[in-house]
Image (cartoon, rainbow, N blue to C red; front, top):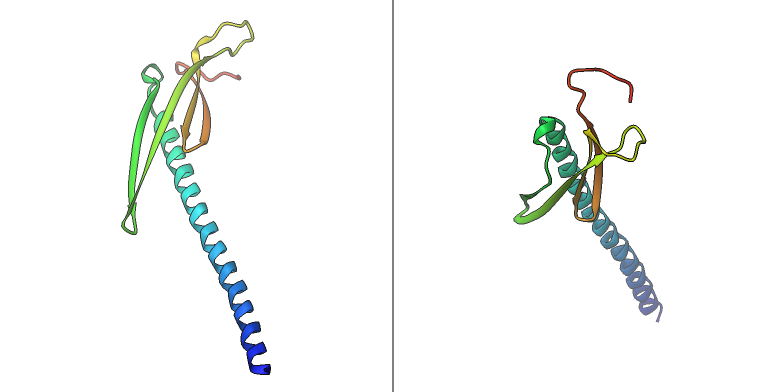
Length: 121
């Protein structure tokens, strides 16, 4: 009888430990996916920063990467919206808000055309 009780106790402990490891691995996989999405968005924003101001437009780009035999595909959608910088309710031609979105994550970037001048915004 004691042996049966010991085996049942060990089985319950093993089940609890297995569940803990399983949920931990699922959390790590989710974090890895989120990190990949954020990394791709930041990389895309760096490309936008290096784009000449006159060439900024809306667009879509698909990024794919293979990892451990699985190909992940991500669609990055970005929009450019003129911004009112001086409060006169008119969008300024020298400033745009760029919003990049992928997989429910968004990053915003305010791009200003200085035309070679340094000014306080």
